[in-house]
Length: 205
Image (cartoon, rainbow, N blue to C red; front, side, top):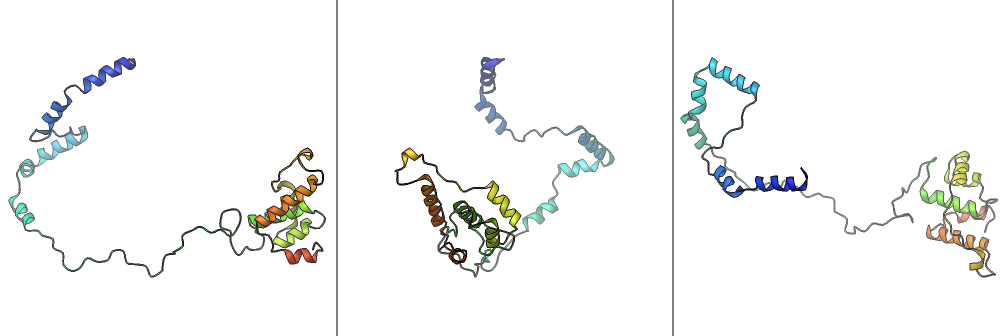
């Protein structure tokens, strides 16, 4: 049919639509929708069994009409408080504050065998900075997890760093030194100063 055919049929459907709508609205009683075949047969059987049923449906019951006019609903008293005020006060400061550098709330108490993203990032950064001092056993004891699990974490995960070629860096600054400074910045951004005593015990400071 194409675009031209659909445009033509649309024009036919909209032809004289205002007058046709007013004609339907001005009818005294709208034409009811046809009944289903099973419903029509059931209604026909009911009218056949009880001939007075048709008269009862068509004629109004005056007694029921009078009872309906005598029904009134009155309201007394004050309007009840549907939503009572809560005794707990709402927080005045609705700003989101996070206890970590990863912009989401971390639990304050971590059970043994579990660890937070901040803790494991600290372990990876320390191990990458000095693998001889920060061994997997030392880091596993820090976060209280199994050594085998810590070995897998240190093997398959790393902290993101940025590599700068030697020709772009001054001669006095080596890439290794730059990488060490980058890890120190990561630790500062994570506010890592909790393991100062641990570093003293293992001879770092």
